[in-house]
Image 1 (tube, one colour):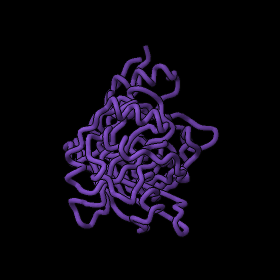
Image 2 (cartoon, one colour):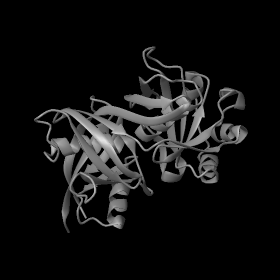
Image 3 (tube, helix red, strand yellow):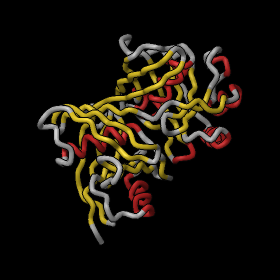
Image 4 (cartoon, one colour):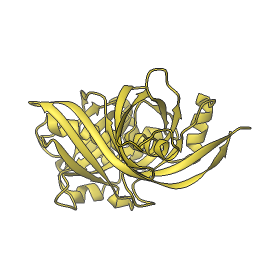
Length: 295
């Protein structure tokens, strides 16, 4: 039975045991789909990421939740690039680099700076696409809130920057803090609108220098709550730009505070009028565990 080197990396933070934990295997050659799924279930983080050689890019990466593979994920991208630098597979000795990442959502550029153990990773996500508009009353029922807690002018909508996710804007931090979703109804909502997960956010923040605060749920993926979410932050940024709520080119987002895993995501958006064209998210990471896993 072969052994594989496994890291547990906390993303969107530099403080261990905060941010979003991610399992990382940087040398995954030889693993089958079934083995990767079993490892992800065993690690039991919201995602585990596996890196392979690529014929089309600098690295091929695959993302697995405990329940299934997904095409693109933000915090695992931050985590795997941090780990690849630590392992010496990406060299920062001559300064910042841009590498290409082959994913099931396409080939994406990743900008990396810093030093091993102290890296900053910036991820360009897939071009935003705006999908189904969601029924407000059904959304409110699944989240166990009143429809009046949703921002009146902001229709819940599925947005994808690589992974389709429901974007739901609520009025206040208090509403966000008291969310107790009905996961059976939330799973049905995600199935109905072909959404991988549900991202709930407000423009109220703890730190007035930040621009949004969010929580993230993925009922059908076996993730009760994802602490700090990269791909959905990109979808949220596209949504906020599209609907005119936030058209700043760069800002910071809060997440994870309500479950004791605070993290911060930096956002960049380029747009033409009401259309967001390019969305990037960025952050740092810290390794908290290294060992071997037997397959």
